[in-house]
Length: 156
Image (cartoon, rainbow, N blue to C red):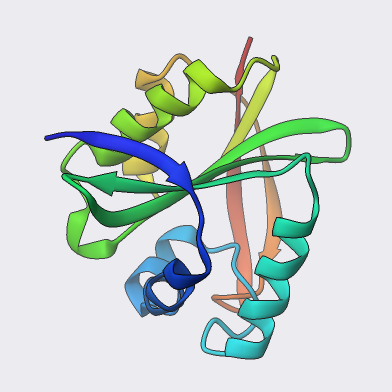
């Protein structure tokens, strides 16, 4: 399995939109847009994210096929990482491999990540990558329409 990261291109957006509205993926991610099926909101989000030069938005390719996205961004003065893997590719080590590549490129530390408490696979990826659980908080998860416990991880 060859995993590589590359910058997001306009022609990747249709594929990302399909994944980001998958009901199972929305539940696992939990913290999504209020209506994951709203293409205008999706496009506005990606325009905003891509317009900020401090954000690094990359796609994940496995054997030259688009299989996910990974990013770093700053929110409330903390650098965070986030990733999204195509639901058909879950459980294959793609997130772990992509995160390892991203950590080589992202020099800023500490680096934070968040995962819904009901998503143990994402927590495992973070822990294997050297992140430590540093807290939990309950937040409104618009995509699933309920409060969700979110675990916060830190990599020094």
